[in-house]
Each structure stands twice: as C-alpha cells, then as structure tokens.
Length: 86
Image (cartoon, rainbow, N blue to C red):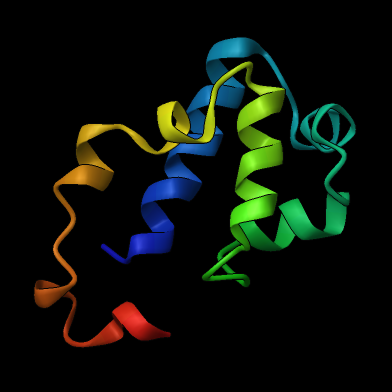
C-alpha cells in the first residue's frame, strides 16, 4: 500500500463516520473541492501540509491528531521500494 493510500483511507473513514461528503469537507476546510477530489482519487500523492492541516481542522482535530494513527505510524518508507521521495 502506498503512503498516500493510507491518508486517503483516513479521510474517507472520517467522512463516513461523521456523515460528511467530500464536497461538504471542502466547504468546511476551505480546501477547493477539486483539490480534495484529486487527493481522494489518488491523483495528488503528496498534498501540502497546509492542506492536510485545513482538513484536520475541519474534522476538529489538530494536524498531529489527524496524522497519528497506527496504519500511518507503522508505514515504512524503506519497504516502499524508494517511493518515499515522490
């Protein structure tokens, strides 16, 4: 699994748990819907930290809380066949 797939799954999971559609998340976060669509579709592999921060705030989380979950914490860039610098 690619690193970007992990945070896409997180965004989708949080949206599902909270009953929020991606277009509503865009409004709540102030991030363009096209930007969120590209992230969720996997077209944007490395979104800016500022973008993830805005998404975190929309979920009423700090960026640290948003990025602090097992699947992401256990990700190994060494096992990713050198893809970590894309």
